[in-house]
Length: 531
Image (cartoon, rainbow, N blue to C red; front, side):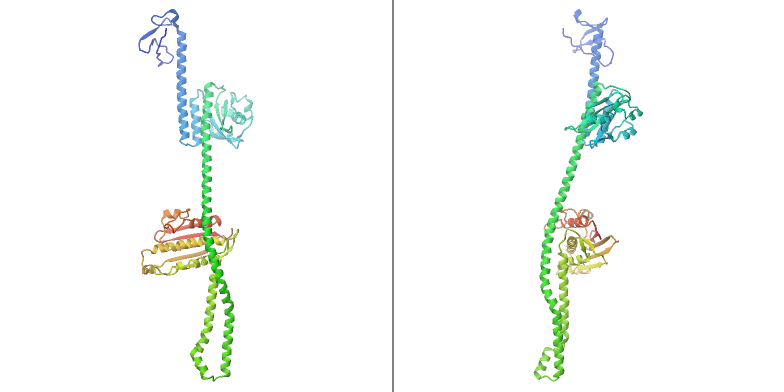
């Protein structure tokens, strides 16, 4: 006979007086400690102890299902915390509290990280005393180092039911001082078998783990492994991202250096070539003017002697003397030769400035006069400073203090001065747009260059213009790679980025920009005297 019954389990431990089938019809009753059904035979009768046993088994099964569901719900919450990217310490703390809440006995959970494969470091133990956590933080991994150190050493679970008598805890009776009597620990292994951490369950009494306890131990280890491996992957990805970012930065700097180096190399070669070509005729003139002056003086002396010996020349000679205006010629010719010598000296100085600007850097720093570098740069840019039909000449005010010679890369510093001064001229030309020649003359364009020694270790160079200035947003990005405010084809975004690199990275100095929109911009460079 097949009997389908529905049992009311709403009151645990109490046996219902009637059993109802699934259609709601009462088919079974309890009489004289026996269960009978209509038309049942003696063999179909169930005694009361059997029913009670079945009923208890059903209750236990329901309780197990409820516990499993609760644990699954907690497991889902832990996985959700991992997926949300919560800090590892918080995830492990949540996991420890979850295991403690699902245990049928009082238990305190602990996670310890493995450090360099030699020591265990505190990770999470929310219910253990902080003093105890601090004292076991950093314990060595070994074959007789409590439950956790031994589990990490052997890569296997270690169950200690009585800390007081177990030899693994012979040197660590500190646990007893905090009322800890039993400790089970299991290693948390990576996919390749590396020990990542350990998980331990402490009890305030001697205790042997049940199947339920072992299930909790396994769940905690599984979830912790997911959390820790995700954390390690994130660390690896962040490190790789950092390395890629640094590689990109290095590539950008290399590109910037190559572009600027080619640019300055071409300019330097041109300037050096011009200086060399100038040097030849200048050297010829400089070498021949002094003897020419001597020859002229000798001729004048001979002429004076001739006039003394022959005071009455012929009419033809007198007529020629008047024609050439001999007295004026005698007075002006020495002046003419003197001005030629001044001009030759000026050309020689220009040639020297050109060679100063175009000098190639060595692999090491050399002594350099900063003011000579500034002057040579101004000379290269002089054609942009002159007046034209649109605006008057740009005033350049130099306020040089006595500066000592500094050790640096002169060619690179000349690039710095060139880029900053060229940008200052660009800013002034931009400010001139829409203004008449008269308006500009009333408030002339000006570039001011100041140098001073701050102390016995640092010098400062300030280059300022009264151009358009810049906004705070632009000022924050002014040294960024490839950032430019100029129109397409007029700016590469490399100049000031290179300036920052040369000053800060190559020379160990500092550079800052101060600007007020509509009033102008100042670049302040601080360089060490000796590096």
